[in-house]
Length: 437
Ligand SMILES: NC(=O)c1ccc[n+]([C@@H]2O[C@H](COP(=O)([O-])OP(=O)(O)OC[C@H]3O[C@@H](n4cnc5c(N)ncnc54)[C@H](O)[C@@H]3O)[C@@H](O)[C@H]2O)c1
Image 1 (tube, rainbow, N blue to C red):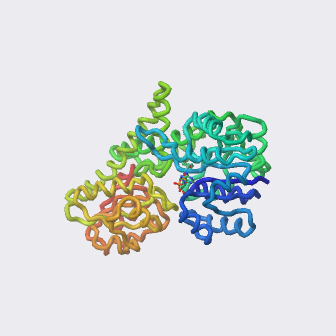
Image 2: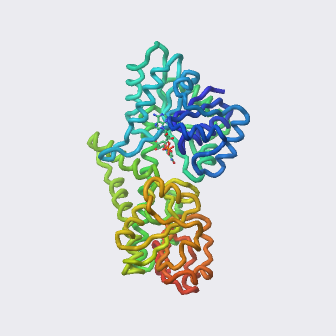
């Protein structure tokens, strides 16, 4: 079992560091954010991720998992260092690699023995070569190192399960030595016969972007199918189900809604287009998916306007702020632009999210009125908009809800409500691709 240091203790670093400890490795998770490390040392989890607390507790108790803000010492003590810091969207859509490069310099300064420097952050093709140069030129000893690419495919909301039982592990390596160490790091998965794709570093880096961009294209595609379904009396759910029964298509990611969001698809699609441009390759399909995704927010706003043409001074209840269910992540959430659009139209917005309301106020909309329950949010509302597919919202009792509303208008942007019930209880409703069902 290996001594591992994970740098960056966010959604990916914390889950993968804990998962690697669960595989039997000794892991120290580091971050420059002292407040995160302090919380973790106290046994508190800075993010919402189902099952993570139990996994952290188990591995801390087994003394395989520790936390530190002393990155220098943690690097010196480790054999494998995972870089899991953020790579947000920079100017012109390219990935901002400043945090990754800063970490590479810290590792170089502390290179006291052979180490594997492994990017788990999503980084554009060519980054491995760039890190090779940085560490080569900044290291102060003659210790050897290998650069490895090991992109992460976990999904927020099911990250623990995704990490422990992945569909595949991708390893981009330049040497047999690095390959053997990395296989050892992932030994339980190797024994389980989880598919391992071992390739060179550029291919590994590209696999991550190609995968995310493909999924984004699927989402934008079904959203456009849904928009047409609304106009022609088709039911997008039936269309998607029948499409998905074709093994070449698969049913995954054929759920229409307000467009993709979160900390990955928006920035990764833009970054892939940017990388293509740098090499005179046009990603026309991905660019179209990006454009369609931006439009989809307006499609939802248009549906709201159809039900409530005069928004000035009216109350709109927004249910769901997270970019998807089971996470507190609000980065690039469709709710942000939709709420801004409602505000611009003069509506008074009240919002509810079981987990993400605090983050929405903290990072994006400090003035947003948030409520503690669905009923408090919808009280006196002229329109309700559902933006996240939380289970709590799937189970809305439409009969009991209606007396609380000023007008029975609902936009179900996630298609989670029963159309039969919406009709039965006399709602005016819009959904995405099922309005004529
Ligand atoms: N969130 C996901 O679902 C997901 C899935 C797969 C891949 N990824 C990729 O993983 C990477 C991390 O994403 P995330 O969502 O975990 O980000 P995050 O913002 O939740 O976490 C990043 C962490 O890195 C820390 N950090 C930043 N600079 C640092 C430095 N110089 N030294 C030490 N720590 C530093 C931050 O304080 C933060 O805690 C990104 O490249 C992302 O694209 C994310």
